[in-house]
Image (cartoon, rainbow, N blue to C red; front, side, top):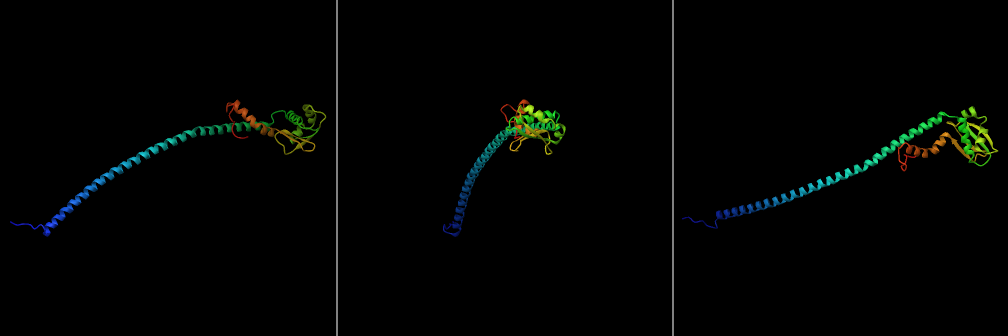
Length: 217
């Protein structure tokens, strides 16, 4: 019977190989276990991040929707204000056109405007500046009409043709030129337009009684 020496190189080699195999199997088992744990943790983290991003996207979308909805009244108001402004400016342009057309009694208009100014100005000596066209048509005799309409006497009134004036009306100055009352039709329209535009807007239902009637005059 043949016996094997336990200390022989062959036996030692087999034992080393067996131990190495067992160690390798343990390393692989542990690696597989750790890998599975890591993969599960990674999957859970990825799922968490995914849910957070989805929730964040939903919150962001909701916020953007709210912001968009909030801008609708503002934009609507802006467009409405712009439309009202356009309508009012068209009305203003038409009024100006009719004033320049002078489709009325210019003599009476100038006399009334001059008398209105003189009633509010101290003194007795005045210069009435009117356009050259008005001066040629009815300059003579205008003084008496103005005195009568003003209700003041005595008055010393001189009529002067001003080539720079267009569009009708009158500019009243005292003799020293210290007091000037611009009652040209265009000047009156510019002065009265803020209140006129408000009344027009309210009466035509463009705005309510307490709403502004567009931009500045």
